Image (cartoon, rainbow, N blue to C red):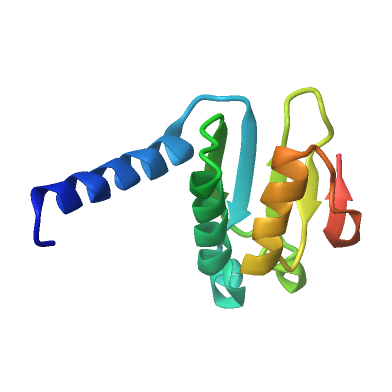
Length: 120
Protein backbone atom coordinates (compact mmCIF):
# COMPACT_ATOMS: atom_id res chain seq x y z
CA UNK A 1 0.00 0.00 0.00
CA UNK A 2 1.37 3.30 -1.02
CA UNK A 3 -1.55 5.70 -0.90
CA UNK A 4 -4.58 6.50 1.19
CA UNK A 5 -6.74 5.86 -1.88
CA UNK A 6 -5.37 2.35 -2.20
CA UNK A 7 -6.01 1.69 1.49
CA UNK A 8 -9.57 3.00 1.10
CA UNK A 9 -10.14 0.72 -1.91
CA UNK A 10 -8.92 -2.30 0.06
CA UNK A 11 -11.14 -1.35 3.01
CA UNK A 12 -14.22 -1.10 0.77
CA UNK A 13 -13.48 -4.51 -0.78
CA UNK A 14 -13.11 -6.06 2.66
CA UNK A 15 -16.38 -4.51 3.84
CA UNK A 16 -18.21 -5.82 0.77
CA UNK A 17 -16.86 -9.32 1.36
CA UNK A 18 -17.91 -9.14 5.02
CA UNK A 19 -21.45 -8.10 4.04
CA UNK A 20 -21.66 -11.10 1.72
CA UNK A 21 -20.70 -13.46 4.53
CA UNK A 22 -22.65 -11.91 7.39
CA UNK A 23 -25.74 -10.40 5.81
CA UNK A 24 -29.24 -11.39 6.82
CA UNK A 25 -30.63 -11.57 3.34
CA UNK A 26 -32.63 -14.20 1.56
CA UNK A 27 -30.53 -16.49 -0.62
CA UNK A 28 -27.85 -18.56 1.13
CA UNK A 29 -24.84 -20.37 -0.27
CA UNK A 30 -23.27 -22.90 2.09
CA UNK A 31 -19.83 -24.33 1.35
CA UNK A 32 -18.64 -27.55 3.02
CA UNK A 33 -15.40 -26.65 4.79
CA UNK A 34 -14.68 -29.78 6.76
CA UNK A 35 -11.20 -31.27 6.50
CA UNK A 36 -12.30 -33.38 3.53
CA UNK A 37 -13.74 -30.34 1.76
CA UNK A 38 -10.65 -28.24 2.34
CA UNK A 39 -8.43 -31.06 1.07
CA UNK A 40 -10.59 -31.27 -2.08
CA UNK A 41 -10.30 -27.52 -2.78
CA UNK A 42 -13.19 -25.93 -0.86
CA UNK A 43 -11.15 -22.84 0.03
CA UNK A 44 -10.67 -22.08 -3.65
CA UNK A 45 -14.35 -22.80 -4.29
CA UNK A 46 -15.43 -20.44 -1.50
CA UNK A 47 -13.06 -17.73 -2.74
CA UNK A 48 -14.40 -18.07 -6.30
CA UNK A 49 -17.99 -17.71 -5.07
CA UNK A 50 -17.12 -14.62 -3.05
CA UNK A 51 -15.20 -13.09 -5.97
CA UNK A 52 -18.00 -13.76 -8.46
CA UNK A 53 -20.64 -12.27 -6.16
CA UNK A 54 -18.47 -9.21 -5.59
CA UNK A 55 -17.68 -8.86 -9.30
CA UNK A 56 -21.41 -8.88 -10.07
CA UNK A 57 -22.12 -6.57 -7.11
CA UNK A 58 -24.59 -9.09 -5.65
CA UNK A 59 -25.27 -8.13 -2.05
CA UNK A 60 -28.49 -9.98 -1.22
CA UNK A 61 -26.81 -13.37 -0.78
CA UNK A 62 -25.34 -14.78 2.43
CA UNK A 63 -22.32 -17.07 2.12
CA UNK A 64 -21.61 -19.41 5.04
CA UNK A 65 -19.59 -22.49 5.82
CA UNK A 66 -20.41 -25.85 7.32
CA UNK A 67 -18.42 -28.89 8.36
CA UNK A 68 -18.38 -32.32 6.78
CA UNK A 69 -21.82 -33.74 5.97
CA UNK A 70 -20.59 -37.26 5.24
CA UNK A 71 -20.33 -37.12 1.45
CA UNK A 72 -16.56 -36.79 1.34
CA UNK A 73 -16.32 -38.27 -2.16
CA UNK A 74 -18.44 -35.36 -3.47
CA UNK A 75 -16.38 -32.53 -1.93
CA UNK A 76 -16.24 -29.62 -2.39
CA UNK A 77 -19.98 -29.46 -1.74
CA UNK A 78 -22.05 -26.28 -2.18
CA UNK A 79 -25.67 -25.80 -1.13
CA UNK A 80 -27.81 -23.10 -2.71
CA UNK A 81 -30.86 -22.22 -0.65
CA UNK A 82 -33.29 -19.76 -2.21
CA UNK A 83 -36.44 -18.78 -0.33
CA UNK A 84 -39.47 -20.66 -1.53
CA UNK A 85 -37.36 -23.08 -3.57
CA UNK A 86 -35.90 -26.52 -2.99
CA UNK A 87 -32.39 -26.60 -1.51
CA UNK A 88 -29.95 -27.68 -4.20
CA UNK A 89 -26.68 -29.43 -3.34
CA UNK A 90 -23.86 -29.40 -5.87
CA UNK A 91 -20.93 -31.81 -5.71
CA UNK A 92 -17.31 -31.68 -6.82
CA UNK A 93 -17.54 -27.90 -7.21
CA UNK A 94 -14.33 -26.48 -8.64
CA UNK A 95 -13.71 -22.74 -8.72
CA UNK A 96 -14.82 -22.70 -12.37
CA UNK A 97 -18.04 -24.54 -11.52
CA UNK A 98 -18.58 -22.19 -8.57
CA UNK A 99 -18.49 -19.17 -10.87
CA UNK A 100 -20.96 -20.86 -13.23
CA UNK A 101 -23.29 -21.72 -10.35
CA UNK A 102 -23.37 -18.06 -9.34
CA UNK A 103 -24.06 -16.99 -12.94
CA UNK A 104 -26.68 -19.65 -13.69
CA UNK A 105 -28.39 -20.43 -10.40
CA UNK A 106 -28.00 -17.26 -8.34
CA UNK A 107 -28.31 -14.67 -11.11
CA UNK A 108 -30.60 -16.41 -13.61
CA UNK A 109 -32.45 -18.92 -11.40
CA UNK A 110 -31.35 -21.88 -13.55
CA UNK A 111 -30.14 -24.94 -11.63
CA UNK A 112 -27.07 -26.55 -13.22
CA UNK A 113 -28.58 -30.04 -13.25
CA UNK A 114 -25.52 -31.99 -14.29
CA UNK A 115 -23.67 -31.02 -11.06
CA UNK A 116 -26.58 -31.58 -8.62
CA UNK A 117 -26.12 -34.43 -6.16
CA UNK A 118 -29.26 -33.77 -4.10
CA UNK A 119 -32.24 -31.50 -3.80
CA UNK A 120 -34.66 -31.30 -0.91
